[in-house]
Length: 233
Ligand SMILES: NC(=O)c1ccc[n+]([C@@H]2O[C@H](COP(=O)([O-])OP(=O)(O)OC[C@H]3O[C@@H](n4cnc5c(N)ncnc54)[C@H](OP(=O)(O)O)[C@@H]3O)[C@@H](O)[C@H]2O)c1
Image (tube, rainbow, N blue to C red; front, side, top):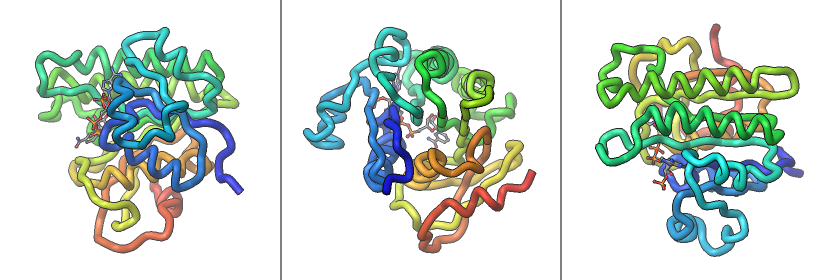
């Protein structure tokens, strides 16, 4: 039996976290569609079997978002602008306006659950990362729009705020979840962030939740679901 029956649109699927989201959706046998900037990159990462599951475009362009949404029941967004490249669009265009645009079109198109990968410390305007064109504040504004649009009855949001992202296998560490942006530092594997985003689709405690997540000691995990039960308010 499938744990989630709808189609999930993965936005930013060719990114380092997004690619793990796709792998974990495949692991859980959940249907997906991919919104990517490069079809070539998607085929290299996921193989020719995803060719019918691709829409090429950017969250800067509403008509391309519309084409990608289709009949998606949920969105998992792992997009992040490139903050160090002065030629890339700024965080105001991607992490704020792009996310707002995506969330609005998703809401208008009947998406029921919007899952956003954001960042630790977005509520800290003085944080050193904000020297990169206010990236954390821009992410907070994107988050705010997701919360506003998806907190109505019948809809849900889940906002994950991971610590520094590293690249190891999934289910290899104990995790720490918290709310209120109280964790100042920490790291977490992208694979675990992806797994938590995917299980949020079918974990009721994840509905209408904004939470931070980092890893603690190395320890094999059979599931990450129980960490939602340990969140203190
Ligand atoms: N790095 C960290 O330590 C850290 C810590 C906390 C939170 N985060 C956040 O976590 C998220 C995932 O991080 P990551 O390291 O996995 O990111 P990443 O590897 O840089 O991937 C970012 C993805 O966003 C896509 N993208 C960028 N602009 C786009 C646009 N206009 N339209 C559509 N897609 C677009 C990229 O497309 P292409 O594949 O075509 O380039 C890529 O797939 C990001 O929001 C990041 O800011 C990062």
